Structures are given as C-alpha cells and as structure tokens.
Image 1 (cartoon, one colour):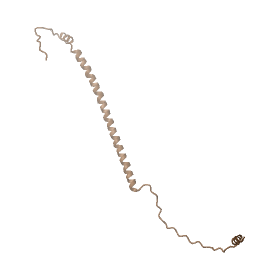
Image 2 (cartoon, helix red, strand yellow; image 1 turned 30 degrees about the horizontal axis):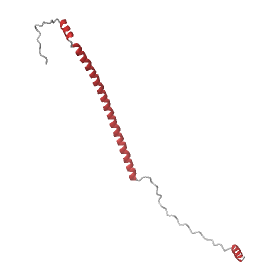
Image 3 (cartoon, one colour; image 1 turned 45 degrees about the vertical axis):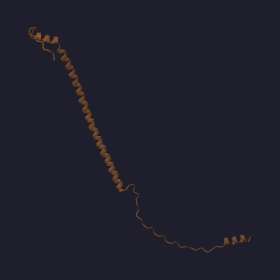
Image 4 (cartoon, helix red, strand yellow; image 1 turned 90 degrees about the vertical axis):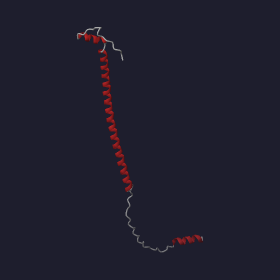
Length: 127
C-alpha cells in the first residue's frame, strides 16, 4: 500500500509549467530551383542530327526508288517495241517467202512478156 500511496501522491502533485518561448525558426536558404531536364543540350543536338540524317536518307531512298521505277517503265516500253518489231519482221519474212516462189516469179515474167528460151539459160554452180 505504501507503494500505491506513493503513486497516488505523485499523480496529483502538479509541477509548475514552464512556458518556453519558441525559438525563431532559421530562415531556409533560398536555393535556385533546378528544373529537372530530361535531355541535355548535347543530347538534343544529337537527336536533331539523327532525325535530320534519317530524313535525308529517306529522301535519297525515295528518289532512288522513283528513278528506278522510271527506268523500269522505259525498259518495258522498249521491250514492247522490240516484240512488235520482231512480229513485223516475222510477218515480212513470211511474205518474202510467199512471194519468192518459182511459180509466182514465172507468172510475173510471163505477164511482162518474157519467155523461157532454154538456149539462153546458163547454170551457175551453187555456192
């Protein structure tokens, strides 16, 4: 009980309150705000140079593709001209073979008034 009485007496004894004056807070040093930059100037310059190089290569590639397409178109036109000319040459060679037959030549010679005189015919050895 003596212990309880001590606790009890101690709980009701109030000590005088000491009021403390709050110390003035030190003023924070003003630091310049550093904005967080994502890229440095050098990185930006490299990025712009890279984009410019890619754009330049794209333009060069498109120009080469365009000139290649033009050349292919010209080649196709020339090939169609060649096939047309080959077809005409074939038709003309057929006409030549038809018109150079012995019977046709002999018929034309008779129309022009020529006659066959076997005394005037000379045989030439073939080459």
